[in-house]
Image (cartoon, rainbow, N blue to C red; front, side, top):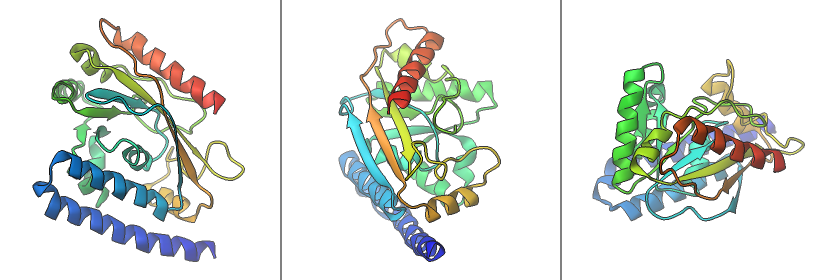
Length: 246
């Protein structure tokens, strides 16, 4: 029965992805930003529903205007979870995601900024690009761990991309993501870590029962005259404290 459910979800997911590609290729060019964001919110929420994911939102409403969203990172579905709550977010993602089949086209189509994490020169380019986006009033989202973690314990936060918020005096708004499922406070099915391939991770999500994600929006933080390393540590501590309490 579980395999039959997974196949059914996979079929619906495939059709939904094609629908998303059609929206981006055929309709986005003629839509204003609020209309695009409405489509992103709906599409992301439906994607979670197709996988049977229960979305819980807590905390504050995201502040209006430019902001740098800073979140912990567990799953390739994190972007859909955030977009279902804050559809205006433009993510900074590692460059190889752009070359993933189909998924790369989708994330590129919604304004993602790509970074070659192994290249210091490229990291500097993305910091400048992020700063320009923030100056223009955009919301940019980053995963400062630089990769996915198991969930309960955060990896160190890298402060490079936070410099874009500091240099533009743009507030940071932390987000806490916690995936859960029956019997597991921190879901093992949602994790995308170690040697797990994207196909293996997809199958784990497709076969999961009772999978859910909680998105908690924390208080914005000022960045004026902040030290990026100390700020990264402070944001990490705030998110870790919330994970410990949740």
